[in-house]
Length: 533
Image (cartoon, rainbow, N blue to C red):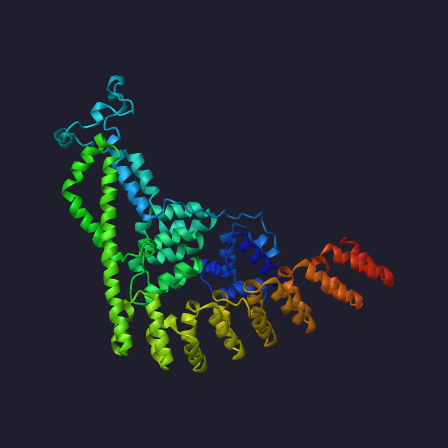
């Protein structure tokens, strides 16, 4: 007979070894994260098709999965971000490539003679000596690949579906490399499907390169795999009717449209002279790179100043509208406001006037306590679920407590892992357990509680005499806690409880229980404990 609890522990161990959260595993298998939670707590067993998918994902056999034989850990090392990923560095690399391309040999190796070669390895023939000579230089014709090479290239052509099938068995670094090399062949839906197997850094770059395609649905699917700060920025941009703003633009404080216009303007200003600049590159070395860099910096500074003046005027208009309480005008222009401080000022005044519905409709994440109270009182849990992650931690905990008081366990099961429960996880977990929502209690215990909070829940479970449920918690409780609990049981001569949990107790507690068993003359207990000394 299949042991649900043993299978659940195996799935949990394999998931942790692969550095995956329950949400990431659920996305990889196309199931809900509640289903994963039920498997890992032993409350349910995956169907046969899902079991097969798990064996493929973790690279094990069905027998190993069902018997709890966890192979050696294969934890992927975290990829360190490169300091050269920023857009300005990319532009510098681009210019470098242009300059380096001037020195790249145009002749075959056999054509370059020792006498032609200069000190830096370039031949005289490789370096045009005048504008006319550069213009007259013949262009190299690409070599045609033979039939075998062409066929091999066709066979190795990037295939999204095949890579998706192989991704669970590849390192994140390898997946990242293939995705970034072929980003133009991906769709937003493809990015969401690869999210469990790519690094956060890679996902950010893919999303930035497909920003026009990113929808709320795609953002919802990739959100569990991104840093909360990144999700905040993307969602705020989308909620205000704008596109997902690129990270570089956010960091520099420049509107992306202005960057585009600035780059176009730069192209026009440099355009006529760019060929001449390249021709001079061979003679001037780094000089041309400095010229391009200075031109770019001047244009970006100009764009920044222009954006700053425009932002000041827009803010002045909004402040005057707020002063005159022109709420209809503000409602029309809220999506255009990028200044978070100004949005908070508008929300604060609207809430002060009791305009909670207006705030809910137009300002979403800038609601305050009164707005949230109104949503809770009205039972507007759908809205709360959509926006709870935008609130401060204190407000998130307030909403979670309200959900527990109303016994809205389904809502908590859906959002518990996405919000802060730092100060109330034990309170909500115990309430869920007492209300028979035990799968939720396990979910919160595993993903939201500190060690001290887990011990509070375990105390409540032990007090209820529910040792079967306590067995499901053993792997997340410390050996010291188990030991203290069993020493107390041994002092009360409850050796049945000792027998159930002694394998998870710490050594010092086992020794104390051995002393109690000897003093009592209970040699069955002595033999039991001797196995664990």
